[in-house]
Image 1: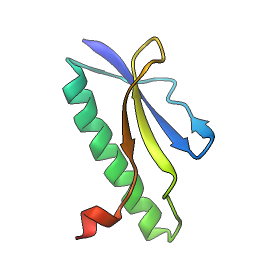
Image 2 (image 1 turned 90 degrees about the horizontal axis):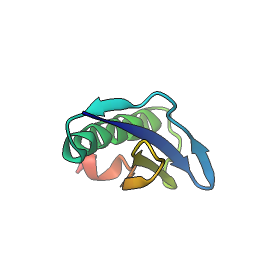
Image 3 (image 1 turned 90 degrees about the vertical axis):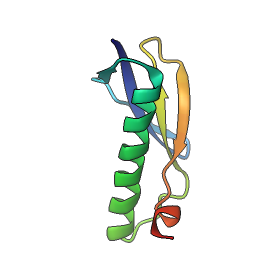
Length: 78
């Protein structure tokens, strides 16, 4: 199992995930990332705040960003 970190990028700002989660592979971590991005996008929509410049970055233990997932609730409503 590898540890993956889910950082939130808001424009130039970064909200780091200091704990991370263990997954058997990147595909599973990416699935979790998409679920988290969906939840964050829907929370922003409910709170009537923009998340247009937000992304969730899936990184490995070295800090290398492996996937970048856009946080956007609009496609989920279609």
